[in-house]
Image (tube, rainbow, N blue to C red; front, side):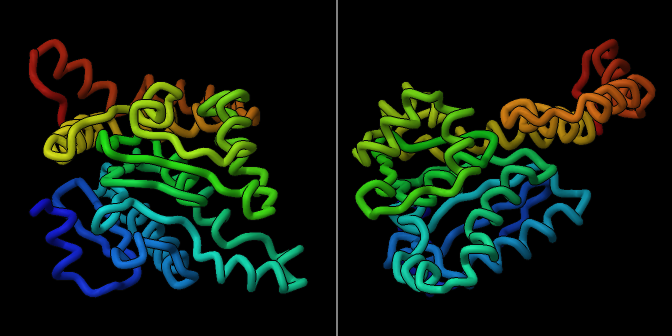
Length: 265
C-alpha cells in the first residue's frame, strides 16, 4: 500500500493537514473519498496555514499534496453555484482566487507533489506552486467551458504566463483531458516519475531548496513572478540585488564555495 493510500485508509476527512519536518512544511489536502474536493472551510484553513508558514523563519520549503489517489478534484461545484446566485459575489471576489494568488506569492519556495489527478480549479492551485512533480499516471482537465464558467482573470494569466497562449487556449476552450506525458511536454509538470519514485524526487528537490539562501531565493521568486505578470517593481528588485551584495548570505556562500563545503544559511 502506498503512503497516499495508507493515509486515506487511516485519516478521517478534514480540512488540510499541516506536517512539519525540519525546514520542510507539508500541507496535505485531506478529503480522499471526494478526491480532495475543496470546500469553503478548506480555503480558510489554507489561508491560515500559509500565514503560519510565512511567520516561521525555520520553514524553508513548502510541499503541497493530497491524500489518496488524486491531488484534488477542484472547488466544490455546489459552492460555485451558491456563490453565482449571490449578487455580492460580483464585488466581493472569489475566495478561491485569493487563496491561489496567496500561494503563488508565498515567500518560501513551493513544490506541488501531484500524487494523482488534478481537475478544475485545482489545476490552477498546482500551477501557483513553483514546481510540480507528478506521477506518470496523473491527468488533468479544466472544465470551465463545459460548465459555462468564465474563469477568473488571474488564473487565466497564470496559465498563459506559464504554459503559453496556445496551451492555455487548448486547455480552457476544449476542456479536454490530458495525461501526464502531455502535462510534462507543455510544461505543466516540472518532472514526471513513477509512483514509487515520487517521494524520492520530491525529497531531493525539497532538500535542494531548503539548503539554498532563503533571502536571495525569496527576492528572486518575487521578481520572477512579477516579470511573469508584467508588473515588475524594478526599483525594489534593484534594491534587493544591491542588498544581497552586502548580506551575510553572500559572505557565507562565497566562504563555503572557497572551502568546498555546503553553505549554512
